[in-house]
Length: 123
Image (cartoon, rainbow, N blue to C red; front, side, top):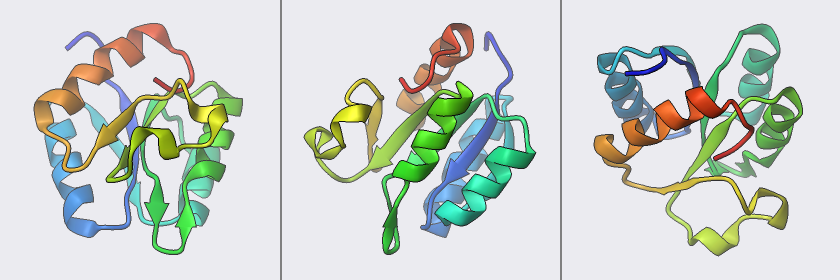
């Protein structure tokens, strides 16, 4: 592992969030928080240092786009997690990496070193 990242997980399905967090911790990363809502994620993003975020696109009755906009403004890279097609994202996120659920650990972990080295918003 090239870089130990501090990662925010925004996922409203508890089991998926736990699986992601477990995989990231086993790979040596720090999970800063795992939260199920936009409101909670924005609070964490304002209070904690985050190197990378995983954002479920659809969070109950809201989307994670406000979180993505906030992270972009802070220069924090992120990737979307979704079951939707890649073309379903707003145009402003066209360059952001989108991981299809269910996300395999190999794919998840392979995107992280490039993010830590590049330091660019989104993937």
